[in-house]
Image (cartoon, rainbow, N blue to C red):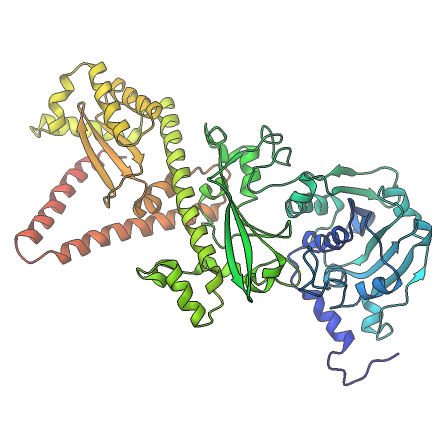
Length: 601
């Protein structure tokens, strides 16, 4: 039956346009099918990938031929199957009644055609022998030969799927994609490799709670009795608080992170009702970050793939939102934040119909809270926004809570990182810059320039170590790190010590003159630390060239800003003695700096 030339939405054109519905990749499209299965009460799911030998160029290659998702859910009756293949329809459209992971009614057809030209569905409620079948075929739709979902009819499930599938029970559904033309991954191995981490993360609560078991299996269509891959998915927890996950040893059986504080509940008013949003924060255990370059270890690389704020809706992760992430900073892999909200807040969070994004939540990361509040409380600003009917108002407290948590987390991780790195460097080799500065100082001493610390150089090594260690500990340096720094400095005959600490001062660094040494304490709270020091001290092993270039660019920008801030400081001094003193200080420091740097080859 031909469609009307003046249909508001010509089906053959609309379905073609829907192929670009925004699925990030095949794994997200597969997840849509799994949503339907879990909503239907499935306790077991299977991703089955069949490939065939394909002649490409001069040699034969194995290429994906069909992809299937099999579930042990309740199955569908005649009418439900037909609705499930209809775009924009479904059984979970009533937002007032629905509280599960489905809702939008677009999952099965949209996800399927985003990857393939044809989707076949078998479903049964009273044994596999009683399966009903229907399908969509884009070539038929485009030719206007298929203008409605075909009437479901009894049809035997192909023997191939009966042979490779293990979840065929009294009820269930089998969705098969064929004529696959838009999947970026061309082999069953790449599909499973790329889907395993994502699907394990999306459904981690279901898998961890033993509510669902998810099997991934690949096979040669011509040899289905010889599986190429056959495994069960493990939970992938970006907060690393779960036991027995996909994280590599030693954190496959135990959590790699600790809970940071306690789980917080924020009550949000929306459409006349109150709804609870839960926030869970975690941070890496100190032992996970000890030693040289923990980020390069298998578990560190695993954490690198799980950076961001995990947005969870009805126990299912929507996305790992990276809007809050400092992309170039490896510190980001060592914290976790999970935001859990109910489906009743879908419109407020801006949940998309393919359940891949929470757009309004992502935009919270761009809110400049300091500019917005301007000395007022969050409550006062929220009330003002509510009066103006600003949609950001209910989420403002959530944004504030996340921003504060991230600030505290990053500071704690940096303090932990710098202490560990400093101790590791001191243990393996004397610091080069400190040695050069010591040589330059000796030259100045020979020329008659005397410093306050010079007279303490005559004290015994043990006394000097004790004084230096006390000063460092008083400045917030961990005892073990302070001990290592003091011992290395005195035993190596060094004059200078660099250390990092969280200082309650606006200064970029402070100077301590004790024990015959000069301690320079860098303030990790100062923006210059992140712009100059930290960005250059980050590990480079395994880092892409573009990222290294970005680090150098950020460091150069930080140096320029630091110098320009000094220039502005001089500019703000009143004409006369104070400005002259500032200029003289700059000139004197420049002369000493020249002597220190002249010996640097």
